[in-house]
Image 1 (tube, each protein chain N blue to C red):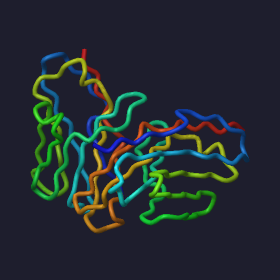
Image 2 (image 1 turned 180 degrees about the vertical axis):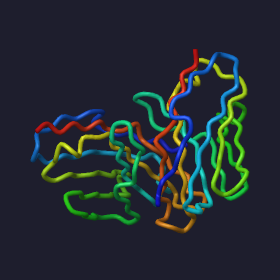
Image 3 (image 1 turned 90 degrees about the vertical axis):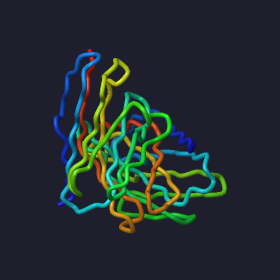
Image 4 (image 1 turned 30 degrees about the horizontal axis):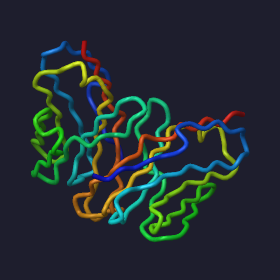
Length: 114
Length: 112
């Protein structure tokens, strides 16, 4: 099973409120990623976990938090949502050394901030 | 930061046509190149990948990599309506941390 699951599929949030998105995979992949995708733009890598080590991209360092309580689950947390956070959030996972980088994506969570 | 440019942004072709999608990279240290396909409402899914210069063919799909010109392409022979999707190219240095840089995609529509 190469399924990556994301919950919820749709999320409506108010400006200034927190948002928590969930991702899970059962492939025992050691790396899990979070991307933000806006219409007509490339998926933008926000952060990724390699095992228990969190790597956050420099330009989104302060905007997003994440946790990985076990190998299968990974969350993306926005402490105070702004209008600019409205986007599709894609979770992906990969196995180091396997297929040299192939990432398996979930269907995404569409976040709308009002 | 790696920059990935895809062209065209969108493409409409008749069923049975040959389709060519293009991608250029800015990072000459990139070693891993891949095409992902995303059908509407579905998760992006890896289509094909390549590490060395040259061509790779799988069924109706052929990818071509020219590292010297940082150009990467996908060719679809006998395009089918089921090929209609967003095609994303991606590249990375192939390191253990597997950071990939994506293009904005080409939206392909194949008309029956």
